[in-house]
Length: 399
Image 1 (spheres, rainbow, N blue to C red):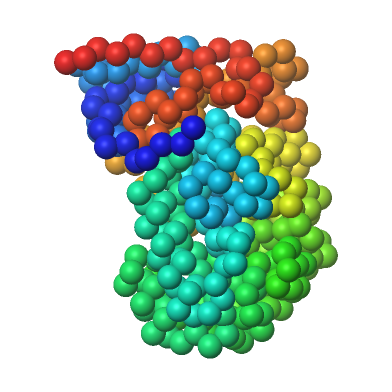
Image 2 (cartoon, rainbow, N blue to C red; image 1 turned 180 degrees about the vertical axis):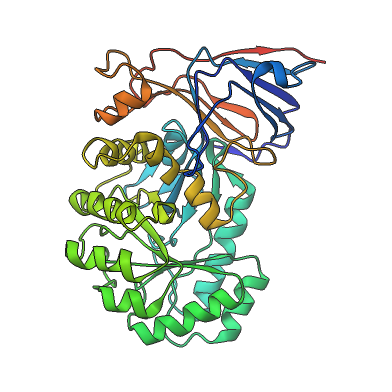
């Protein structure tokens, strides 16, 4: 079910007959375009078919008037090794999540490793190992950005430099280790930022043994780059405190599937009212005690749209372009130069919605008809979503 990084290039790929193109850009969520041209995994043209050079393509994909969207980016996962999670003793969860439209995952810490080392040498070694392993191994083709150490008391500035020099670019959730005070976290977050390492802080009640309550004052004092699961993972802070975080902090507002759904809606609505929707990013926070959710990202988008009255095209931006920009990723947007990571969707068969966007606004998750990563088709009709009304077709033309 899982596979190593593909060593082949996509060659020239042309996607035509797109019915709806979601850009991932929250300032312009829908593109007036029906064609995308790809060369060796990167987008080289976006527009109308008549304006694009579609000749001599090795692969032509007829989208059959379905929706083309950037591949979803899960901003908050907890991988361990390979495509296995000890949290639920499940094999193939990453590949299965790809069938839910996810093409990139970002680790918030490899916390579920049995016997996870908590000494400074050990936690650094684990982070470097996880970063290297997932850089070389991509289950289902999914890009897993791993190697996110859980910081512990006693770490000094040199430790963060060592991590950065070794290629580690993330911190796991601040608060899952022994560092829980705001002033301690603030110092380590600043060291991490100095060396280009992005940080996420746990928000809310404890999630696993060893974690603890991280309240709004600690979050504000620590000033991590990402307010991790602002709606709790699983237990949320009071809604008023969450809205205060949205207002007083300028950092990313991360909403997760495995959190408080009522507060998820409140946080997203607060960001819109504060006119900072670009700060909202989405994740699943899985695997977790509630299991693995291959469709967690799609379910969260449908939740925010249907019960939060957020236009679905904006909710898709939360899960794509917003995350790409905040995380500094070369994916998540349909624009020239970006990675050709896409999910093709249509409304689920027999949905009450007249089209994909309306069906999501009514609370139905879409059907996935195809997933592409780096210009290479990774799956056709999803084995996990309800069947899409229409699916793309593929034609290969060897040159």
